[in-house]
Image (cartoon, rainbow, N blue to C red):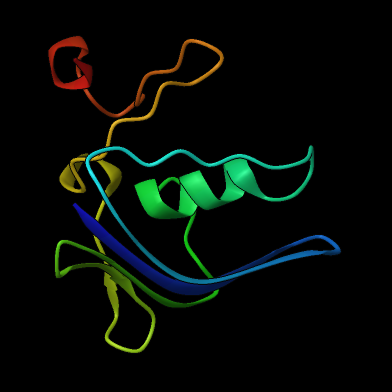
Amino acid sequence: MNLRIDAEKKQGSFLLRVNTEVSGERVGIFGQSGSGKSTLVHLISGLLQPDRGEIYLNDECLFSSARGINLSPERRRIAIVFQQAMLFPHLSVKANL
């Protein structure tokens, strides 16, 4: 797996800027409370849209503000384990699985 992200997202007074490339079978994100970990995961998964930038997974463009690309979360094939139980409300139970 290869993930490339060059994006930013402003939420209130917080601005997350990310420009990195990581490879491996699994990727972990850690940091202090309020440092943007959840925001980053939501940007990669498509639950949040970056204000600008690009996100690529294995050379497939998941998001590009310049090219007008924004794949929906279910098309990104990314798994997230949330701290609380969550389902996509627009999908059936089977589709959520």
